[in-house]
Amino acid sequence: MELTAEKIEVKRGKKEIIKNISVFVKDKQFVGLIGPNGCGKSTLLKSIYKSLIPQSGSVFLDDLDVLKSSEKKVSQRLGVVGQFNEMNFDLTVEQMVLLGRTPHKKLLEPDKQDDYQIVEEALRRTQLLEYRRRSYLSLSGGEKQRVILARTIAQEPQLMVLDEPTNHLDIRHQFEILSCVKQLGISVLAALHDLELAVAYCDYVYAIKDGEVYAHGKPEEVLTSELIEDLYQIRCQTYVNPVTHRLGFAYEL
Ligand SMILES: Nc1ncnc2c1ncn2[C@@H]1O[C@H](COP(=O)(O)OP(=O)(O)OP(=O)(O)O)[C@@H](O)[C@H]1O
Image 1 (tube, protein in one colour):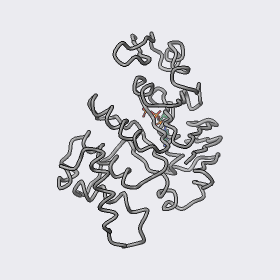
Image 2: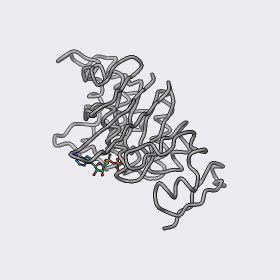
Image 3: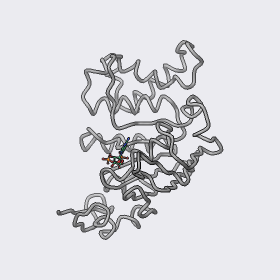
Image 4: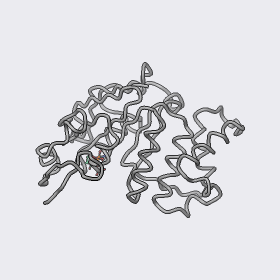
């Protein structure tokens, strides 16, 4: 599934938060959004997954016009792992993940054998099988993050949007969650803060600064010392990481 988001503009009061941004995700591509706090990554993602309506621009999933389509139609194709996963009522982990099936059901349609199989597979992929009877609210931040990913996997989207999915996660789980998403073999658009993770997982990145696309391309081409210094206002030296053999970054204020 391809995402084509073109000429997106978002204003809040007089402030232009997103200034004419276009972003493309090709079929099965893993695309990263990077940039400093407040540059507009979450706002751009929200306007793509319809949590806010941009002042102008268009968003298409293949030929589905997202901004003009029902939430149900969009949710059958697009899944979201957001930044904040708090809720006030308690469900078990399994019940939470079953909610991912909602877009594929009619109103009040009961859960079927198929739904339970899909949930089981999502719990397995996120290593949550042992947690299925646990209360969601009793989980740690990192465990909750994995449940939200499992719920989104159970939704069976063809495009997944992730807003800083590695928040709350220890180093191993940061790699695991992104590997798990990559193994789904679907199109992905993810806001990431960790540039080494961006190099490890992204086929393509967009660097955002002050609500505009500052640079875009393959991670190894975009993530130069000069770009990182401009983008984050920090001294940076790139090198070949001796362990991963990929691009690495050393920083100093
Ligand atoms: N409703 C709003 N009213 C006014 N300003 C807003 C509103 N929503 C977002 N902003 C501002 O827009 C800018 C972009 O915010 P956004 O959350 O998109 O940034 P971000 O790149 O995702 O940041 P972070 O890396 O910190 O998550 C910020 O300066 C934020 O304060």
